[in-house]
Amino acid sequence: MKNLTILGSTGSIGVSTLEIVAAHPDRFRVVAMTAGINLELFVRQIRQFAPRIAVVASTDDVPRLEEMCTGLDVKILGGVEGLVVAATADETEMVVAAIVGAAGLVPTAAAIRAGKDIALANKETLVTAGHLFMDLVKEHGVSLYPVDSEHSAVFQSIEGHRSGDIQKIILTASGGPFLNTPADQLSRVTVRDALNHPNWSMGRKITIDSATMMNKGLEVIEARWLFDVPVEKIDVNIHPQSIIHSMVEYIDGCVIAQLGTPDMKAPIAYALSYPERVSTGIKPLDLTRLSALTFFRPDMEKFRCLGLAYRAIKGGQSMPAVMNAANEIAVDAFLEGRIGFVQIGETIERTMDAHSACVLGSIEEVLKADLWGRETAREICREMVR
Ligand code: NAD
Ligand code: MG
Image: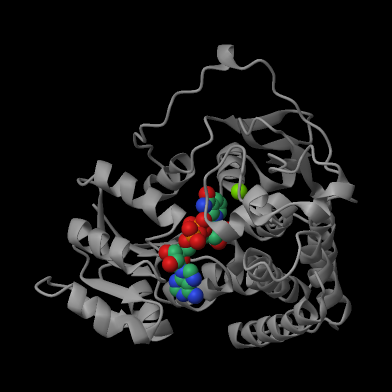
């Protein structure tokens, strides 16, 4: 029996995680869970999984949640302090980090410091503070398992191999909804077009990140830290069918890949049950029904966000944190109709241009760089005329 805390239980990853927990009540138990805004769903989850602790992101929502949970044996908390209590609960052995954005930094860092293993979906934590997180993981002797499908594929493809033998990591990307949209038409795409992902059903922020391909940029940075591989050895291939979830090429020319039906339950389940495997109910992959698996290089001019992510990690220090913050602000502004689709990349680039990278020696310093990035990007968005 593994005791879990789920940070972000009402999100796309959180809900899929709870489906796996529900299918294996003999293996997993939920000790604590946290949510942002969807209190109705959260209360249904609390009733079903009976956690000891339930935390809502805003302390203002605590009285309402308490009222909705009348008669249930659950401790209700709020705010970042509450998130930290959930992430460090005594009985918890593994924390599923599935909050979106840099908001996941503080509770995930607290979990590692409390000796909890981490199933990491929240890639923004590694993008903003990869060096600090990997040091913390080593210092506290915890295990960090990737939930992101590409990184789970790499993780599965490097097991039993020496990291020195890796020639290249090849992350696959679906290319998102605008793969075949001419670059000069991107300025006219709508929020609805951008939310219409061809292969994956995910939260709104990561769906927009997939449309700009910033998601792949964040994943390059995530892979750099998770697998301790220089960014020069990390390539991106567009693979529209999303069947090969990523590959590792070795110095002898052999390439090992992980394949499957695209469904996040597979990488989530592997992170929860490693080194064992559990059933997920995912449709088996029938290769005979696929007409082709295709691969090609991304168009870096059209998907400028991918290039910005390479620029940020090569610049290093505070640049990735600032890039990530600007992206979060720009995606919000796009979703709220304040800026156009191509202005997402423009906002990020202008924020990065305005930033002089500096060393980040602590999570507090990362949060400062994050705040600077947010304020600068907000200002740039305000100046922009759609
Ligand atoms: P989502 O928006 O569906 O869910 C996010 C969860 O975090 C929700 O429970 C929300 O209430 C909570 N939350 C949001 N802001 C918060 C805040 N400020 N404080 C506390 N809680 C907050 O997002 P998602 O698609 O599930 O993605 C979660 C993370 O996993 C992201 O970092 C994403 O990049 C990563 N990821 C997601 C997928 C996917 O298929 N959805 C795949 C790979 C990686
Ligand atoms: Mg991914």
